Length: 78
Image (cartoon, rainbow, N blue to C red):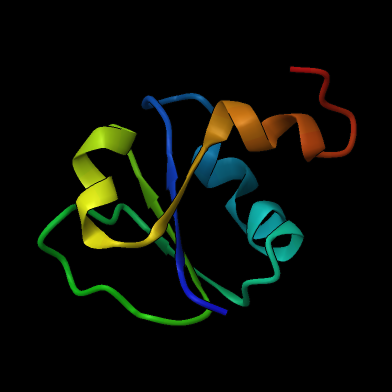
């Protein structure tokens, strides 16, 4: 599976839930603190960033906002 970028503001819970989100998306590894310009693993990684979705969409990767995926986390109702 191609890598996916997870975006959201600092402190929203991206890092705390990254492993769980990666599993939900079928990815096996997490790259936390990714910023545009860093190497981009093409496959099987969740790239966690504070950058806006607009800033990373140019990289041709699927972009997921934390607020959109958070509702799929067990016990969350956001």
